[in-house]
Length: 158
Ligand code: HEC
Image (tube, rainbow, N blue to C red; front, top):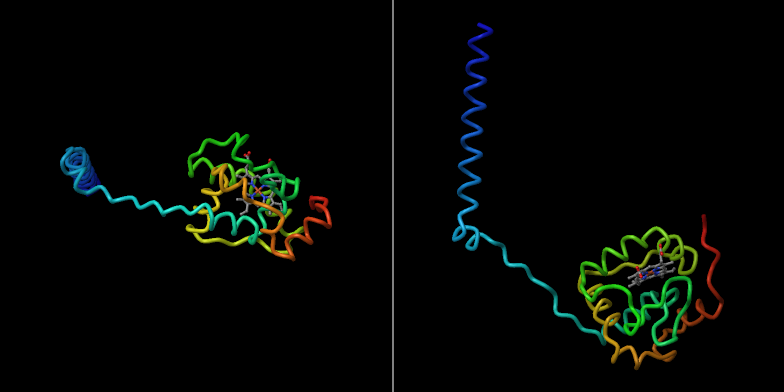
């Protein structure tokens, strides 16, 4: 009884293995892979809209561009940005800084910044567009954001 079960079990494993190898071979066939590849869609990026969001959403409270903005975080001037101009690397850096950013956002802004994928794509476009950044001035800041910057940075909560 016991050995009968084991035999059946072993057979199932072999069958499963054969099926797996079959699947691997099928999916490795180049023509099939090309047909099945999902099409990636990247959003269109708009640095002008990003400029508005950078100020309005409050990135500027801690990051300066063109000498406008706070200094709690590193400056995000395109001219001396040490981040590769590649969106995924940009997000990875933001993610790494997330802990510090979230603490400071609660302290300085009183809320966590929210954005859609399109918003963040446009902010990325602005951060690496030196020409649009040259036109970024104090007058781009909404009143309440300007006030937070004037009041000075918060001591980070620990
Ligand atoms: C309340 C302050 C604060 C706000 C608001 C803020 N950041 Fe930051 N950010 C920081 C700090 C501080 C760091 C550095 C964290 C570290 O070094 O660990 C940072 C790091 C980053 C980095 C990585 C920089 C590098 O050189 O690796 C990027 C990119 C970034 N922030 C983008 C943004 C964007 C875009 C926004 C707005 C959506 C934003 N930040 C809002 C404080 C802030």
